[in-house]
Image (cartoon, rainbow, N blue to C red; front, side, top):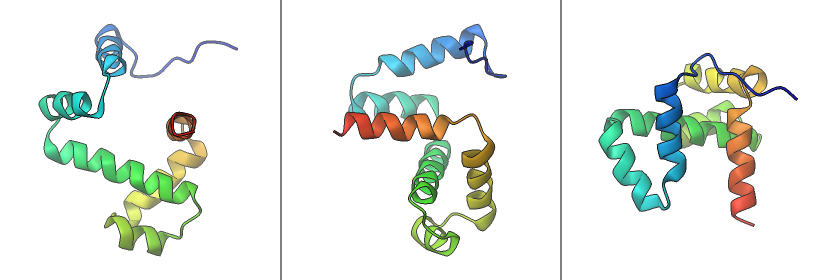
Length: 101
């Protein structure tokens, strides 16, 4: 199977991702992301991942909208990504399940 190639791939992004992968604890993640991202960016990523998890669990848009305060446009976009994207959310879900076993 050929190596996955992202449209975003470049040397500096590789270095950023290597730094993220080297973090050892939730506390390290909070410190790193609070320095690298704005609060709004972190909250947006958190909300998108929450929406994706709920979609993956089969929840309805109305339930997701109520639980996450995400717009139906955001929920729809994440649904499209889950169905037609690069399978990044799936990789994250599988990694979490494996870690929590």
